Image 1 (cartoon, each protein chain N blue to C red):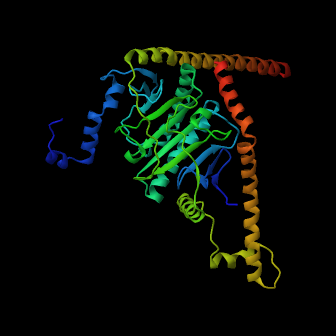
Image 2: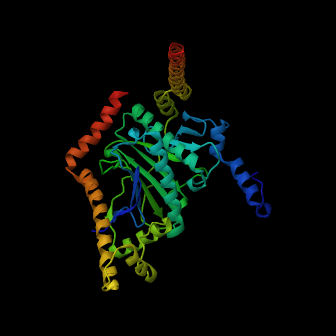
Image 3: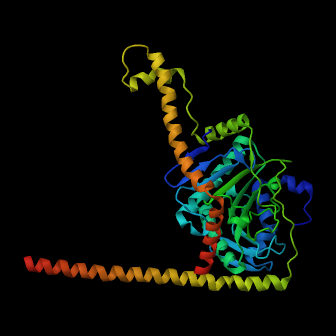
Length: 235
Length: 163
């Protein structure tokens, strides 16, 4: 296979290239057992091995048995199962390593740090101050930039807030019982009112969340460590 | 105050924070209180992963990013900042100044073997799970069996009585 010429490669169909990639995939060979590895997890769909070049002790590579390169290629059912497998492996590695947490890291694409042609989920046991570059810092995004990105994403998701179009504002009065007078003015008034109330609703949910999130930081941290300690003790 | 929630249903909430790792950073979190991954029940973690993958695809389409990261910070040591479990989806671009690249170490064969042992033999771990699952199912079946004849008996008895 290594003797393939550029010309031969160009003649191949995408399916043939995929087949070739699969044949040459180190991770497929690891899964099949052709290449030896330290397996620590194995179910119908996924295999977990110890990374021979770990970030920390107990670093696990969890991979689909099917040759899949990036997560968007995976069918939703399997993506769901991947979630369960990640949780189960994390659970076991916490127990085995005595770590204070795990980072679960997945890269789609080379710019994201993907190095293998086979989808790998890194499950990395973490200790306080282990100096891994996996605790990114958060920064406040410029408002307009943030708003435009959010709008684009929401539009793509089909959940963008509806802009008031001419036809809608004309339809509006018929929905609400409005006395004769100036319909246009009522529409303009009712619109922001509506928005406000929904904003308020979401603000309260957010507030409730923030309360939990930001409450008293010290207690928070304790609770978290407690949770893991309790969890570990319970095993 | 900006509204950061972009989507929600009964189980999960999708947030686009203004205080973010980068532009386009999305967070998926359960509505119910769960602090760490290990607490999340099967259906919820399935859904959260599926939604995360969908959002990652949406980022590819709308932001034309060249990659995405899915990052779970499970525990304070992993950088978890909130008292709530969440999944981060981060769009990636060339030279975006985000660096998640750790320095790989060289693990000694003996250390790996030792850790593998600590993780438990995969076979036995899988077998243990399967054993428990089978046992559960058997108990369930047994219960079902016990209940049905009893009900039948009761029905038959009451029928014979009225008859």
